[in-house]
Length: 321
Image (cartoon, rainbow, N blue to C red; front, side):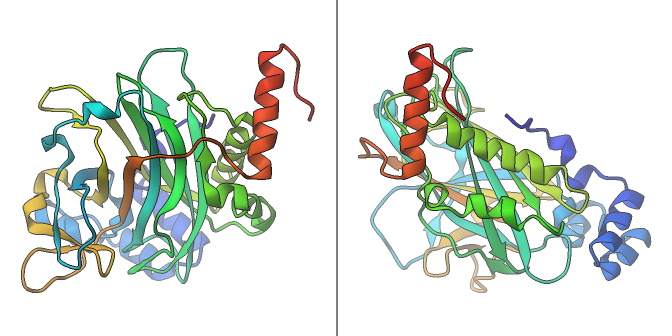
């Protein structure tokens, strides 16, 4: 599995290295701004710099409920109670929103979204990895809503941990690699049976291999990284697992963020200001939801291959290449 490391994000690059990279991908104006000392102020001034340099994320939660056209309240993910009825239950995780306010480079962005789920029940569990390619311009939302990431994921007693990273793809010649992520198997997400352990080893390995290959390209860079643990504890500092929607916002300074200033607009599919302006939050935002899954088995050819590989492994045989 590819290693998830916050220090690999573009926000941790030196000023000179970032400026060189921006010149490499043709974003000369941004490179000049960076070299002149722009894009990284202090306090509130930091909010008006290059947003992709932010290294913090804040986590909000929207309670599950009936559809509505009215703005919906967002609360800190650490303020909600866990739903213990989910323990031992299959859940579905869907990608419901991906907004790019600002990413490095000019023109339409090609973004690799890599998402990993991990059980917190001990060393015997394994990561589940899903990857997808999104196409989006600055100040716009990717064409994604309700896209399955994991279906039939079992929620263990100790909860789950989700990790995500995004990579801006700027290297030429990556079309063949990207096409593997746009197959029906990936569009449907990983369909799992019964436990947190992956029943799709071939598909999981493919996602990991593709992410690793793209991350190593000279013109591709990791932009966002977050890790969100969701458990069933009663501690006041942790984030809890329950049915609903989790909102992840990349911000320059988490201490300056207040969820009471923001609501979710279902009509526009965006986080917006809670005041009369209704301005869309000028930050890179990822939205994913957790719901009960009724899935029993998957239907894609890729999934069948993965199940066959697992059966061969359990029987002590090495699966065919």
